[in-house]
Every structure is written in structure tokens, then in C-alpha cells.
Length: 187
Image (cartoon, rainbow, N blue to C red; front, side, top):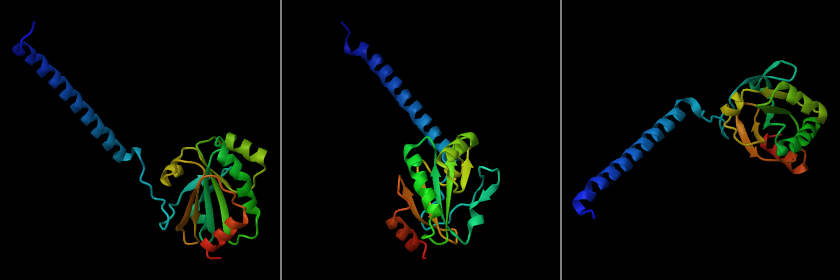
């Protein structure tokens, strides 16, 4: 049978092991958090009432497009992917909105995130879409805008400021939405 004197070194050893383990976890956590600040998590700069960050992306025809090219128009900037069921469902209403003359001075731009040109072109052909589709294959603009769920839309006014943001599926061509878009854009 062990007496108290024999058990003390075991307790000290256990305490040392636990303290060392906690120290390792603390150092690893601090390193992980500091690596985020170093660039792994981009600063979200796209906020309502703030400026819409400009970008340059190719369209399906290889032309480079920037958000600033649409200055002077209200822009509905929608981030989407063809693998997302809500995005697939939303694209038809975005096309109808694009074609609808009831909304004045609005450009609809769909930014596809993370897919190849071939994947996007195949989807666009099947859906018979003609609205501008931009390709963010490297997810750079997605990160710039802080997009981590799809679909996500930003309404940008004529001066390049974000005046509204909407997450999730929406019927963009409904009369309520058209009224809301016209009110938000001051038309």
C-alpha cells in the first residue's frame, strides 16, 4: 500500500502534464488566431451604407468587367453558384427582372463563384439566360464582399454605395420587389 509521500510525485507529474497540455493548446490557439489576422480571413468591406468595392472579372465571353463600369446605374449584384438549389431557382426570376422595363435604371449582374467557365456556360445555355454573368473562379470578389452563403444580393446605387443586402432565395420579379427596388433606388 502506498502512503501519501509516495503519491505526491504522481500528482505533481499529472499536474505538470495537464499544465503543459493547456499551455500547448493556448499557444496553438494564439497562433491560429494570429494567422487569421494575417490574411486568411479577409476584411469584409461590403456593408450597407458603405461603398461597394470595385472589382474586375471576366464575363462568359472573356471581356473584363468592373463594377465601376456601371456607375450612373443602380446595380443588383447577385452572388450565386449553379450547384446551389436556391441559386438555380432564383436565376429565372433574375432573368425576368433583367428583362422587365418596370424597373428603371437597374442593371442586374450575376457573379458566379468558384465554378469553371464551362460549368457556368452549360448552366446558362440550359436556362437560356442573357443577363450579364461574371466569373469569380478564384473567389476573390466573393471574399472581398464577405460572401459566405448563397445566394446573396447587394443593391448598389448610382454613386456606388450599397443601399441594401438580401440573403437567400427571392422572387426578384414580383410586384412587391419591383416596388421596393424602385423605392430604394429613388426612381
